[in-house]
Image (cartoon, rainbow, N blue to C red):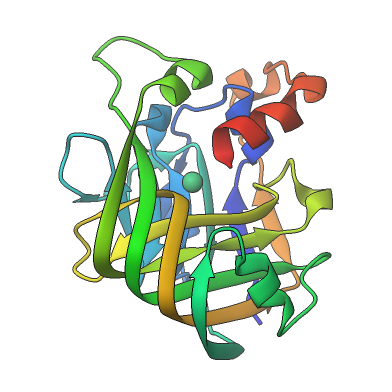
Length: 234
Ligand SMILES: [Zn+2]
């Protein structure tokens, strides 16, 4: 069982540490699966087969350069331990579906759902205007939400237990990647008549903190953080 390798935390990201800091290449060794975001929150990252796809509103999906620096990413070498064909699964009943096969409440899981999506709704940020540094709220307020129907692809993501909810998004965090690797984004809603559910328990999570001065100087108001994570990331 491999670990989850992570750079920075969802808490630091939501508190405003959004500049690219760690090169994707330094983190990806052996990892084929994951999610994150690109520098200055200019795109949602979905990592599949070792390639990171960057989804930005108004742009075609692009492959992230290995040397690109990212503010937040979670990666792992996904080797499914359990796989099931499940039916009538959507964003509201995926937890109940998962619970049929494991007790997820206190553990980390890497999770994928593959098949034809009768519907999938996801969002991508607009790119920042040159020279303009945005804050998290500004990015969150101007995102493009798209719904696709009858599209083949997969959800790639993690289940994080509530007690680790400032390290990563508590509960499910899924990004979508279509079968042809052309369409991707942060998932808000989905519905599948039939899906191949695959998951792997991850006992270890390795978090590398940013080392920059701006991170060390970052003021993190934890009393606001949980609410912000719920509002912006769920
Ligand atoms: Zn996301």
